[in-house]
Length: 427
Image (cartoon, rainbow, N blue to C red; front, side, top):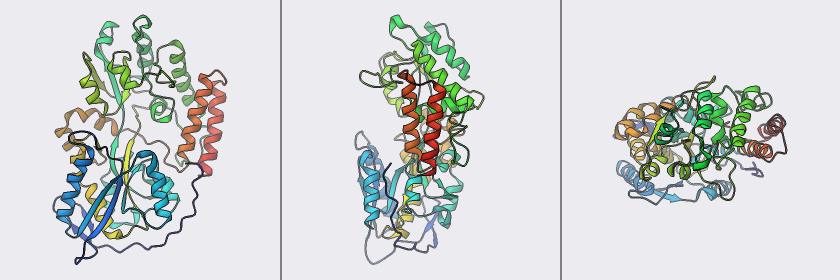
């Protein structure tokens, strides 16, 4: 996100809201629609996938139809935009004073948009208070910027451990590792070069893939205030974790997905084919693995280390543009999308709910989600700061320098921490 100009002026004041109760959601929302005599049209921008029966798009349309049924006079147009274009398109529209009413934002974008002054401050919204209070800590934290929340969780996810039962049995292992130390040892034991089997898959050197190992091993990326990386990203536990992973890669115990590049076998492809004995992944991988011929696998919590069992929070948040037309009606829509009705419907499509009260319902309807629901209780968000994309890119680049034999782990992490400090201080 380098080069984004933070020069947008806030041109509209927020509309006052009164509480009404939606019959299906049970959430106190704002009054609306704005006009009872004419139809208000709201745009909802998102990246939902139209593929599948039912698809994410069709499932969401059913939710929006119910919203429109409950809120006569409001029409919602769901606009699907490719992920790579959505952030820039939203910023351009907001700068022109014509943003959508509600945006389904990647969690990494919220602090950037908040810093630009483009979003409604949810902490100041009375209708949002019960929603914020009911959210899981990890997903909720992705909306935090400078002592306020600028979004509410839409959907969430995290990663847990998948293990190949056949390969474990062949290696004389009775079950999945429960500790990081055991995971390192099992990765070497499971590797069988003659059969093209790697003990462990790590999907890349970016923080989405590496952070669970760092955090669980007692390491950190920044201080708690997200103002410093020096002393954390290059701290003893973080460097020890990176050293361990790179050592396994050098020994041939980690698959080609870690380094990436031409010819690399992705984590899901390698695990499906029995080439990777262990990998961490989200619930979206379950249909792929269930369809893989002859694959007998198990699912377990991420192995615990000195820091506990900590995986990474993923997902999307719902944000409202400050200059959106019909802001009061946009608040109604956002509240409905966060309701148990909408959250449960989307959970059936693999979009896990970001709210504590919805967890039991979603597991009852989709039992396979139970390990992820459990993991979310300790899952952690990557640094929620406008400078995160640069921080992540710099970390990845420095690890690649070590892989190329150009830097030691210590020197690489020192450089990454210094660059991260710059990204955090100059968002």
